[in-house]
Image (cartoon, rainbow, N blue to C red; front, side, top):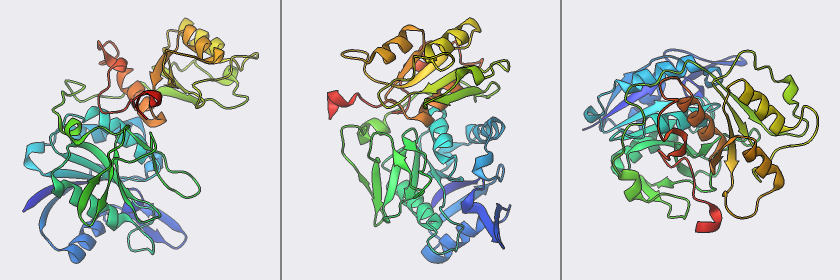
Length: 347
């Protein structure tokens, strides 16, 4: 009998509806296990822990610290896999962080969520849990993943560092690079061979842990996104962040003109205060570039190439903590497929 550890953290998949309000309760997530066993039998032994119960929009660095501490102490050799239930709002952010920190584990750690509370019409929570169990049973992968059924009924499998935030209209998640790693179909993992996807052999390779000890997130990172009219003068840096991550337009550009609206001036201001600035997602540093992209680089921003907002944020946060800020290769290394190949070279 396969043994699976289930970690419950709340979210819609662990919520209960009362009248017009939906909120998490301590006992609601256990309905998921009961529904699964009633419908699909008891061929698996589930061990359950519940480090906290929140709606995922309330996720903070403090909760991430508690979650990482919980996962760090798990004897992974005792389980065939781990399933982590989570809310959908910040699912892609937690996945990216865990993908980096736990890239070395020897079994699958699979994050799941639900679009509606369990038992409601159209809820995919049970389907996502079943796909996670089946992915563990397949013994084809190790590391950190997400599974989520989309509105077409496709049970997509995502690399944790590539899942992107759900859109606010259709509530559908995406995959940075345009394709998921694969799908679960009739209990079988169907790997999607594509130039942006690592091979199954690469996924199964041994990896060293990124950190020697469980990371503790003490210093926040300020994340900004380019948009027309962004006034950097309104950004208060008196509460000094560990770093700034500035996510750029798709052309790897941002505004370089205007008083208060020019990114190079903001980078200079950060540099004077000793605050590193990372910019993503950058294009290849060879070949033609927009003058705006060139000026951002020349002003001193560290460019992160071909990386999602979530993975860029998680990586910046991780390597901006005091225990890791001075680690040799740090931000430049690729730990868990977070940096994609440059499209012109592979597609």
